[in-house]
Length: 171
Image: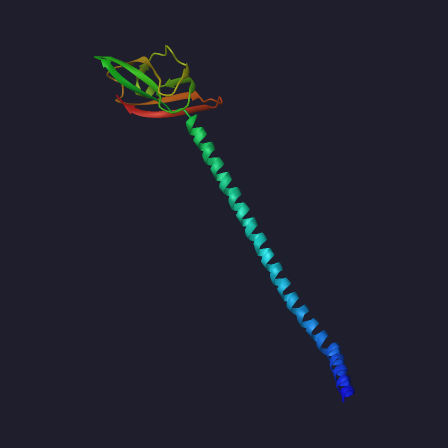
């Protein structure tokens, strides 16, 4: 009887080794393949999200750099304007002033002939006009002069680029 149990046990082990182990190995291989495919998909998604995050960071850095550049340009930008004002009966002056934050170089102005205002250019072109500073020159206004006038102002910025401004005013 002991021998029969031993033979049955050998047959069972033999059947298990022949049928069950390969089937179990196949099942484990299929599960492993499925999980490795999921891991690959997850890695690809992580790479995609990482790439998107890096692109976003690059855009953010570029945006900040452009904002700083604009701030620097505004800080160095001159804004030159002009206005005629009355100093006494029949006497007028034009005041040219820099209300920007940058320095203006070689500032010059002109009033078109159609307004019939005579201007005396004694100090122009004004070499350096710092922020908040101004210069004045005499102008002659007579009966035919227009109440409204346009002043065309030209200057160079820090980089030597020619800038301009047209101001429509009244006296």
